[in-house]
Image (cartoon, rainbow, N blue to C red; front, side, top):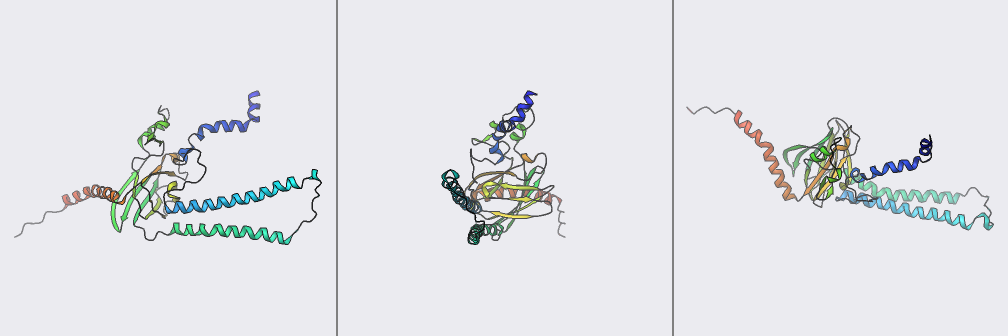
Length: 304
């Protein structure tokens, strides 16, 4: 009974202590966020940079409002306190003041809404895309289809799953250390795959995103957006990655028991290198079909 009473009286402390082990994996939940990262990632695309700029303008506006409001409150509480003989005013209405503090917030909202609307319109504009990729969410993996590049159709498609080491480590009583799952010195436990999505840099890529069973969400923080993958519906978005590298993400929609085990890895490489890789994949994808067609074709009769 004594222990139960202590727990009731110190429930907040107990919750905080219990949350410590979970906070150790917070970086994993946010796709390799930096330690003590409190702000948005700036990202590597035009969209992510624009979103970051709009976010920071909103943040600075809130900081200025906070300084003014709380500064006025603190000043009033000390300057006009009762111990100094201050007497409260008796008026309860001032039309001019009400008009001012109504108009100013409206102007602030308009100033913030204008750039935000421009970014949203830009995010929806997929015109001029040089490449089209179809993304399909399944329980619990991602399917990628390279539809076309520069107007040329391709037949490259594959399934991207959780990497074997993370998959083995996550098993109950595996005895493996999650912190030992690393790629290039970074802990990639539950954030690596067997087949990453390879894309070219400096190329406008249109994504066609849908679901094959339940609702998923394709989310790579460095790209600056996430999009729902809904069965029977094709959502579209685009990106243009300027910096080669590997960018990780996760499904951002609760899609079932293994929701936490369907990461996303995007590998951005220079376009020349990407085209070499894509042509090799295309040759491997079409070779069996060509061989089967040749074998099934009837032999032409001899002349005469």
